Length: 101
Length: 161
Image (cartoon, rainbow over all chains, first blue to last red):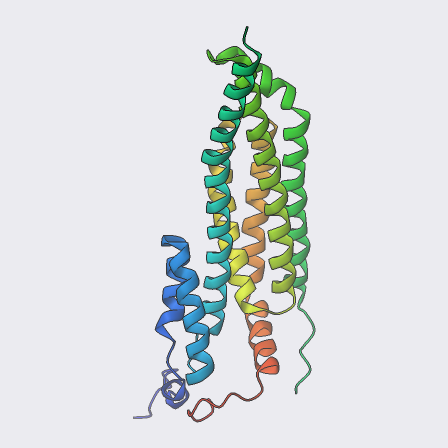
């Protein structure tokens, strides 16, 4: 009986691929869970990959950039939602107080 | 070093659609600026607090909305162009943006205003961008560009067949 090709016959190339850097996966995951930590994981992952040649440079870079963008937006949101209204309110109260009869 | 292969049609179209998404974002900002009078009068009528304070807060909210739309448009274009240049990581970032854009579009679809029209348009464009960027031709091209950019990496592992 002849052996049918399974499509998995030549799996030697799969075994020779370097593993994926865990920090790179963590960088992408934490970009959506807690972005500042995604920046940390992204930087560590990129440094590790340059040293050990593991896979996952794209994941790490994407996680790093998404984390940077989301962290910047969160900081901006905090400024707009909390800081600017409080400063405006203080300014308003000061102006209203100084012009009151 | 190997010359990177030419950009396939789906990726080229995806870059054009990314620019279209950015244009829709700018349209949103423009609509917000043009409609600011209506928003302000509605808020002042609805609010029981001081009209001057309400007006100040509305101005801040509109400025934040316009700034957000412009920054969003710029981010789409920057990462879209990088993805169009063969950066695989930028493709993942654009996909994440498309996800965020889709969620925000779906939440504002039932608005009934001009923003629901632009939201629907943005949703369709974002889905199209992701589909085009992950077409088999695009996958192949990204792999080829990656191979061309990193001809030799001393990994300690034997080269893959």
